[in-house]
Image (cartoon, rainbow, N blue to C red):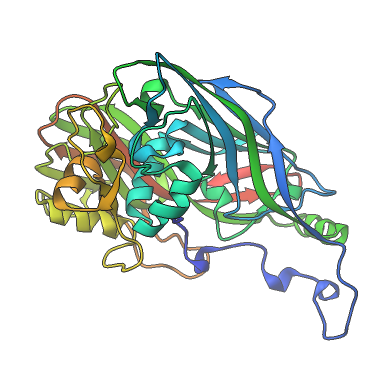
Length: 423
């Protein structure tokens, strides 16, 4: 999946000028350090877990072998087991992607909840459709997660690998596990209706996840490096910038006013989508909901004075919000055939180039950019916002309405391993 990363100028790790000369490399030949590189494989301690329950992974922490978790390297391998009457015929919900089973994902560092993404499955599927490209969906994502499989699965068990999309594990910097007192990844599984779609009238009564394993790369420097970092933090803190999402779900109405108490120093974008039909045999295809107008205000200031009634304008503004406008490599995709108020068929799970109809009725994501010019050094690039208000009007009056807010934050870690967030 394409990451929603911050520009390099936003990274505020310990400055190179703070590193003692004794630790800097010189031109003379030397023996390689005692550091190591390995691939971690950590099994959950929860065993087999049912829908709505939580999976936990205890990551290494503290000095003496924890090192850094390499950014962008983490995924979870798991087996999904489905209980369905008569013969199995099912798929993962939206886009057929296995991340549909993840309702919430959280990272706890040194006992503090450092990042939590609600409605993770809806947000992830929106990014799959609009922040990657057709080749990625048709090959990489399909192989790993069964994205757009072209039909329903006939086996009751299926093993997949889902990327971990938390900002702290996909930042410009690697996560320094050795500075932390503990690190835990938590995943809450979605209810059956949110996670899976039945290919027949035979009901899916339950699903479980077994053999869940967290896999990532780890870089372990030698002990002198770790001790030096600890000593350096006696008078300062380690700082790590990252992007994350604040997501909410609301009951769909024909007219919605959503107040968002963000209290954030950097809001990059606000995005939304409507899922007007939520039956067990529906793929939860995101739609425009018949949008006729949508306005966003940030602390009373209007972001755009256009009412966003035209579907092509909605598409371009969404791409601007993702930083994709007129991008020739990241291109949107959608299903071959989606009629949101009918039961799913193979066409709903078949990848196709996006058209106006399938964008509006099967792969919709609206959005407005809140991005400002990048500032040097410590500067956030989004807009500081205390209270945002999204005012939406359309024709859909049943189902769910989702709002995704892209934010920038900074994690600080002191010499004692205490973590704090600069929001």
